[in-house]
View 1 (tube, rainbow, N blue to C red):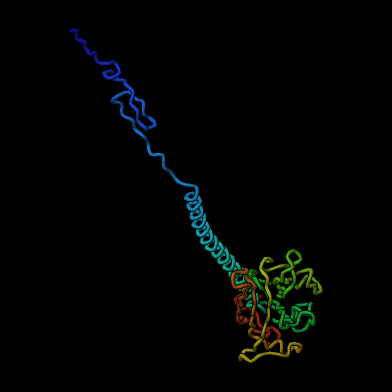
View 2: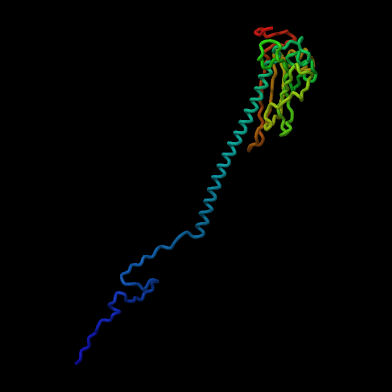
Length: 267
């Protein structure tokens, strides 16, 4: 009886035998490890939501920073307006205080130069909106002849901006007849609108002087009140106005009433 010897098949012993599985990497060498990476990520909806949140946060930060910067700019502008108005007011006060200094009526040919506050020149007599005085305003000369001049202040429209500005009239007493426009220059900043400039007058006892066409009454003026209203930059609350006021007392007596001279100087 013949014996049949079964020889193992190559497919059952070879290391690269096939395996029937449902995995996409079903055919692989035996013992080979397959690593499958996670393919998950952000969806379109998630990206849109994140973008919207970033836009909201960025917008809020921009609004806060914009408001802060605007507030700082407005504050700086108002501070500049205030400082400009104060400088103009102090300038007027310093000049007016020297009214009457070294004025000798007998030596002055022009009527405007014979009084501390102009009393004999009808064009320059004091009003509620303008004031004109004469004297050695700078007091820099110690012997005659003194540079006596007439100065004054009033409001006028600036030709460049159209804003009302404070004008300063300054005409030497030796320059001839009165010419207000010729000898007037701008005093305040034309970018800042001066809405009001008013003057009030008081005698040495503090009583108001209201008769401003009588020479004797004008010569009794000892104190001048200056009130200036400035329109500031527009903010959230609208246009802002600020009022500045100064009381100026003349240092020197009226030359016509006292025939006064500076005794510290040589005559």
